[in-house]
Length: 115
Length: 114
Image 1 (cartoon, rainbow over the protein chains, first blue to last red):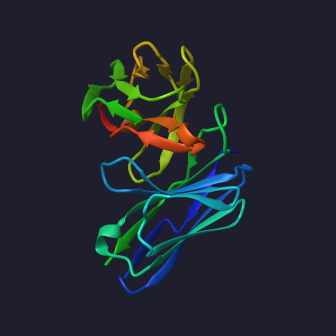
Image 2: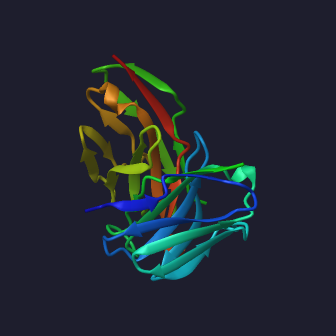
């Protein structure tokens, strides 16, 4: 099973709201990722967790706050977002390390609209 | 730094035509190479991968061979279907510092007409 699940599928929020995106995998992977994807562009890496510790933060604004409660779950907490943050947010997971384990498996994404 | 360059799209083909989407890369060391496909309104799906030189990845009729001498990983399919219409991303794993980062190309949109 190579499934990564994400909830919700769609989210509309105002600029003063607080919301959270959730990601779950049961493949035993110990690396999890958040990406942001704008229309017609490749995904942009936001955060990487390795063994439940934040290992990469790609200079993401503090209005995005990641959390990895356990090895299967990854959250992205959203607060005071801007309309330009509207995008598809993708979660992925992999095994840390080198080939052949470095394949990332993506979830279906959460389509976020900020009004 | 590491980078991936894909041919610009959109690529428009008739059903049963032969498909090639070019992908070249620049990398230090020996990255793994990937093709991901994204259907409209969906996330990325791993299509195929290759982890070392001369490896051929294949899946659902698609193939790509890891060519170190030409730093290429071109995607091919002998006979496309309307259902293959999607955006295709070539990517490499950035192993510098063992970060696990994926470096993506810009994506190529494929439109297959009946």
